[in-house]
Image (cartoon, rainbow, N blue to C red; front, side):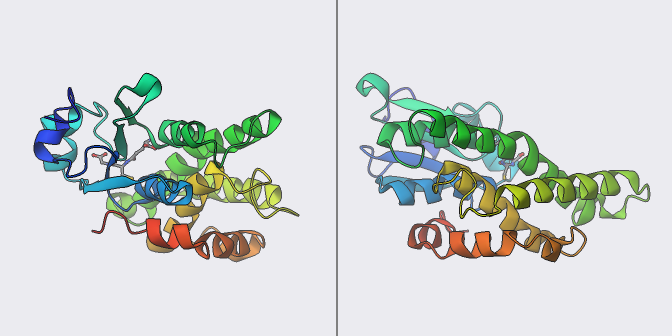
Length: 229
Ligand SMILES: N[C@@H](CCC(=O)N[C@@H](CS)C(=O)NCC(=O)O)C(=O)O
């Protein structure tokens, strides 16, 4: 079985085991990795792992990510030439940037990128995810308005922070980077949640041009639907 020591291969077999194996679904967290792989020009093989328990809670998937969430990867050619498995989209983005030397500069610029990457991982993603739950999905019928209000207010606050950071610059850390790849798909998800209006999207004048710049990139266009639903 290859990559050796990775039982996930039994359920999602690698056809081309020499390249990076991606286990994902085209959600804002999932497409971060397919977009980064496309931007960096790394060869990879994508496996569709749906969000259903039958997939993300299968013993094979849990063997790679005990936290039962996509995305996850195996790089057969990791540090010291040995295979490595990774989960958490932020950790995967940093790994790929360091592997290729792309989309995260050295020196002070690296920390500028990481500030915004961690801001997305700990703030924008979780808060907008909860907003989606309480505004559109299962929580929408909960009568108590406080959870909805809390995530709307926090979502607006975060959009304001990002809008300010994008004043006078095209990309959040200056140059285009893995921080943008982490952030932009989450902004795009607001349309799917039907939450643009309630967050007063149009009042944040730098955000739509930022999204347009991001989605005009050919690698983003390719990566945004991988793996196909
Ligand atoms: N912090 C994680 C979050 C990943 C995440 O929330 N993945 C969702 C899809 S976007 C998932 O797999 N959900 C399935 C489940 O929770 O059972 C990351 O950035 O990788």
